[in-house]
Amino acid sequence: MRDVAVHEYFDTAHAVVLQTSREDIPELKAAVELMLRGHGLDDEDRRPGR
Image 1 (tube, rainbow, N blue to C red):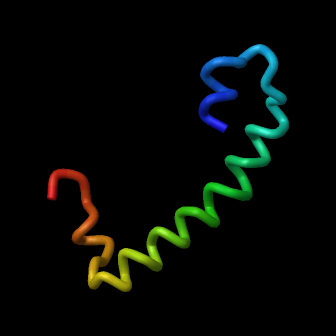
Image 2 (cartoon, rainbow, N blue to C red):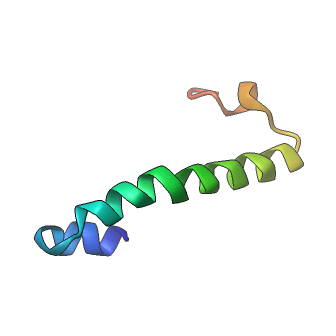
């Protein structure tokens, strides 16, 4: 997705980018949070500057 967005911006289907941001990114975020909790990290441990 990044390669297309960066190198072929004017050929990018904006609807696909919007759909990805609404559907895929929240799923990815949930999976990463689950992995971090599995390593004993919580929201406090992941604050910027820590």
